[in-house]
Image 1 (cartoon, one colour):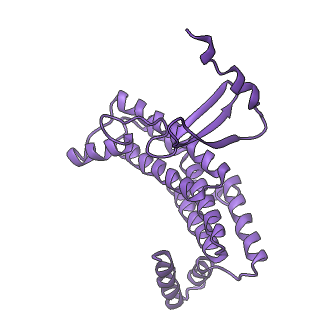
Image 2 (cartoon, helix red, strand yellow; image 1 turned 45 degrees about the vertical axis):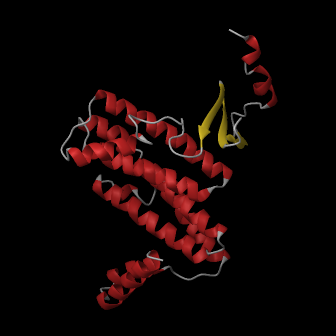
Image 3 (tube, one colour; image 1 turned 30 degrees about the horizontal axis):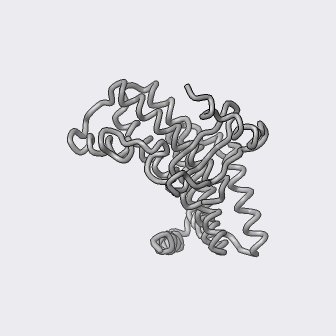
Length: 244
């Protein structure tokens, strides 16, 4: 082995910080953008397009694409051990790239990778070999949804649209609440650390930009007070804004 190909110099130049996520966007040898993440034992490098490792799965851009094709062929198929292994690999890869996009403040890209992960979670749930394997992934669904909601709101703030950011937070919080309800844990929702963080972000934006109650909050209050005609109007307005 040629010792000149070692990473010693590169690792010395870029010290590992155990208290911070160290990520950078650099040019590859052919001029393409790649993401590098400094970890305890070295450096992870990820592609910015397609699958983070740059590989295809049986001719498909990602394992998600492969599973979608399998579902078309057989809607009732059950994933085998190899497919479960590939799903786990893709979950980890997209997690690393998602948090990298967040650190780099490329929020739209973080949203895209979060949505990829949620779509893969949906398929793994629907074609799982057993409940234990399903729950090993479903337990992280609120976490991925938290990232997606946070990134969506920050992307809206980049566009100087605080109202859109608050709508993204409202929508995300409601979607996370649905997951808690599905798992019979609704009583834990308000005290969940991620939920509290998103609520604080929403309150901070409302105060900073002098915005009143959001449409979602108005809708919730209208339903509680049995103002169903108003609730219907608010739902229509929410749908119209989300369709923009």
